[in-house]
Amino acid sequence: MIVLTVIFIVATAIGYKLISDVPSLLHTPLMSGMNALSGITLIGALVITAGAVRLDSEILGAVAIVMATINIVAGFHVTHRMLKMFREKGSGDKRK
Image (cartoon, rainbow, N blue to C red; front, side):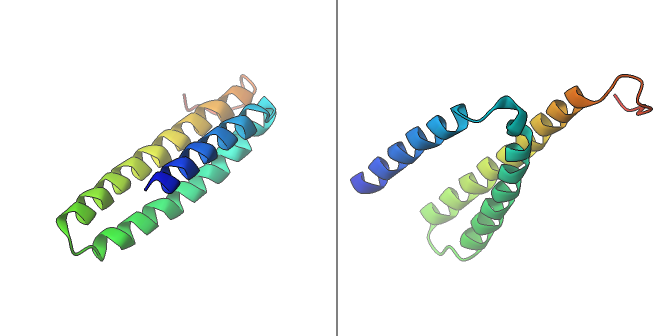
């Protein structure tokens, strides 16, 4: 458990460093890619939860499903807002 915690902390620090060095112009394509990866995470959580036999595994699976769903919905919402910033005003898109 301690080894997994250390791996999680190191991965978090490396991920933060990598993302902070990415130019802001590339954030939108990266977020779109991460949304796709979150979809894979959701599918994995669904499969694992469906095969869980113990209550604690089912609860953890349910938490993973909720967290992955929140990540996907929020990621697409933020990506949509970022893409909206690049649209030209009066481009004919009536949606707001």
